Amino acid sequence: MASYLLKRLGISVLLLFVVSILTFVLVSLSPGNAAYTLLGPYATGEKLQEVEQQLHLNDPLLVQYWHWLSDALHGNFGKSLINSEPVVHLVGSRVGPTLSVILLALFITAVLGIVVGIVGALRGGWVARAIDILGLIGVAIPGFVIALLLIILFAVNLRWLPSMGYHPLGDGPGPWITSLTLPVVSLLIGSLGLMAKQVRASMSDTLGSEFVRTLTANGFPRRSVVYKHALRSAAVPVLAVLGVTVVGMLGASVIIEQVFGIPGIGGLAVTSTVQKDLPTIQFVAVVYTLIVIVVNLVLDVAYVAVNPKVKMK
Image (tube, rainbow, N blue to C red; front, side, top):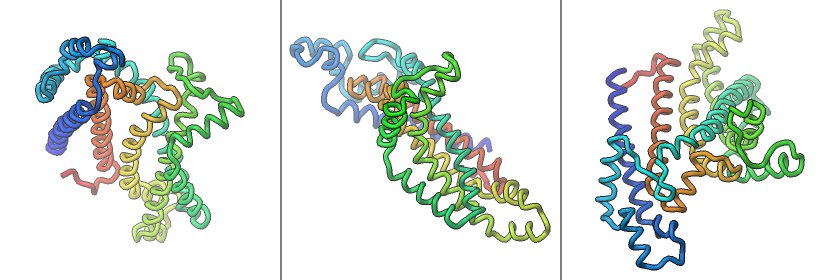
């Protein structure tokens, strides 16, 4: 276990390094820079050069990256080029809304996906076909389209839920849940169908296996066979889908936060990209990469906990 974790740590450091380089290069090579954002389109060339020099935007690209990397290795990720606020504080203030949306959507996806998938595997027939169809529909329709449809129905026509805004949990559970309902539903619909389809397929294969037939023939209760033995054996591929779901939700949350006006990391990433705020974009990319690394590491450990036959190599 220790050697595996050390190996994964080394790979994670390399991944962070590669992501930071790619992000830095792609943003730097795109048209415009933070000086244009600060001064506006009518600024004189002399003033632009002055601000670019103050922000070190005229330095060679390799020099700019080296300054950022050396500071980052000492825990200093810089300040926003737009408002001079430390990017750690800027991103940290937006972590709560993003995690609220993603974790709540992930929890509901996992619970409902497992329940619906088990029902589909046990019932079969039209129930299984309905799950497959709903899964395809959920994957085929983009999240922002689902979000707009939900806003039209529940916010504009029925006026049951707000169309925009976010209330932190400190404002009370009611306003918090109300502000998250539409974003969470928009985010989980596609992944819920995929999760239910995977659980159904894994459970169907496991229920038809020889060891399940042996347990049933030896008189083990049906409930024990399904929930204690079959579900545990089918959990490994389900955990793999859960990892993919987390990554997909991270990407989809960028658009969902924009649609519903949620002050999360995704909205900050979009705004910073438009403004060419390189330090903020860099730190957002690092945070997203760290989340993916941690999630995959937790899932790898969960594989072994669920199924001891899986070895960490």
